[in-house]
Length: 268
Image (tube, one colour):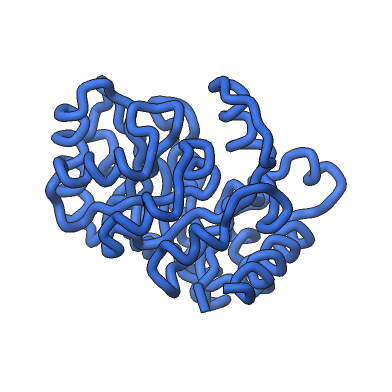
């Protein structure tokens, strides 16, 4: 059975320790940590800025038997100061994360590869891998493009963080994913989304950060995707549902997400 991880973005209203409690209550083995915010320069989140909160988080994870799967997000842009990621990497390692999530948006692929290589080297010093997430509206828009970029990076501690929504919106296919070396996948972000959608950047971004669907409620071929990926891959439940959150609390939403995921896995 694929281990489950609860992403911050599914329950953004919860404090990190409360997210751990909900994850444990619903049978998730892991959580995803948000240490840097969504702005291009990555403003620090409370878990990064507050050592006392990190200590409380470590106690809660130990008490509930939950570990940190990943920490996000290192956004590598042409002007990004890579040295500024050191506190992020330190905090991720302190909290026991295995991976850090990175995205990149740079028209110069060679420059992006070199900068990601530097990030990988820095992450390796903390025992971390870098998992690169392709995003359809950025310069690395697909799984195939991400695999090509990773080949140029040439580091052993980099892989692809495949997000089911971005995979679908990039026009991805199970065959495309199956052609990628399986060792490049450490985990994936699981969600569903409407079959019909607008292709402008604003609409794609809105769905990504506000209105995803639980597995099986949309039009993504999740069965085909999961069959193309290595068996037993950890599944990070990244399912922001802003409208539903107005009428359903976080524990109930996580329960729905976990139940839907288990139904999906039972069909494989």
